[in-house]
Each structure stands twice: as structure tokens, then as C-alpha cells.
Amino acid sequence: MKTFKEGGHRLFERDPETARIVSEMLLDLEKNGLAAVRKYSAKFDDWNPQSFELSEAQIAEAVARTDPQVVRDTENMMVSLALEMARKLVSDMPISVPMLEAAVRDALTHVESSSQVTVRLHPADLELLQTAGSPLLASAQDPNDFRFLSSVEVSRGGCLVETRFGTVDARRETKFDLLKKNLL
Image (cartoon, rainbow, N blue to C red; front, side, top):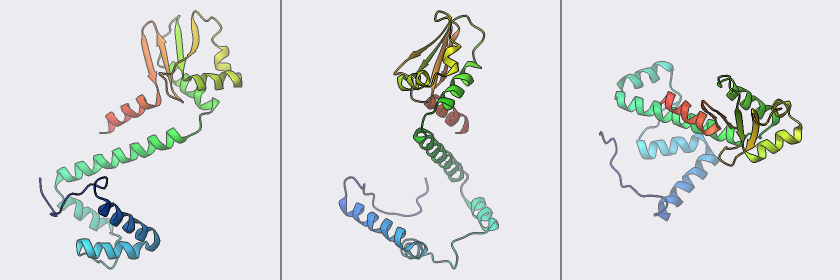
């Protein structure tokens, strides 16, 4: 591993002085914007360009000179950051009847025809569909063949569809894990 800059390693949790300095810097950056960026760039990196904005050619040149492993690691970290931001945005979205109905319908498209289907939803989601009189629930006319059950195993906004052939896991966290696995 290459070391670009030597320095001590202090953790914020254990070093109130480091936490204080970083907090002051963040406040300075928030208050003074680019002027503060310029100040810290000159102080810590001895770099004070006329413009911090790089052209596409400058970016391409810098990437070409960068160790390929650093590029791969950076790309993976950017994908991880984007996924975490998406997970946060989705988890903060309000749960609605159309959203739940779409999640269940999507999961049911992955089910081979079966005479026995159980759709498990978070208790609050099932209650929301019941209160709204969702036509999706009305489609479950024979509780022996097609039924909806509440389950604390299922997070809000997702579902589990169980058949005699197996289970379709359409929980949000499962979808994100699959997406992450495919991207990284």
C-alpha cells in the first residue's frame, strides 16, 4: 500500500480536540464556502489553484495517472455511497396504498401459477390496505388458496410471497442487497 501523507491517527470518539477542530472547520466551510476550501487546500495540501474546477481533459489525465486499484476502490466507494443514499431516500418515503399494491403485484409476477399463495406484509401495511379497501385484498376470495397475512418479519413497503414451490422475497432490504451485489 502506498502512503501519500504521513500523519497521526486520532479517532473523533476518543479525541475531543480532533472533534473540536473538525467541527470548527465544518462550520467555517459552511459559512465561508469556497474561500474556506481554498484556505484548507493551501494549508493541508499546499495547493491553491486559480480554479478548483477541472476540465474533462484534466480529469481524464489525472485518472490515467492514478493507480488502477485506487480507481476501482473509488468507483466501488461511489457506488456504495449512491446505494446508501438511495436506501435512505427510499426508507424515508411515506408508504402509500399504490406503492404497496405495486410491490405485491410485482412480487406476484415472479410466482408460477399455484393454488396456494400467502402474501405476508408488515402489519401496518396490511392495515393500510384494509382501511383503504384495496381491490388487491378483494382478489383473495378463498383464504385457503390466496391470503394476506401480517408479519413483523417484513419491513414496511415490501412483502414476502409464499407458495408451495418457494418464497419470493420482495422486501426492500433484499432488493437493495441484490442491487448492491450486482453493482459491486
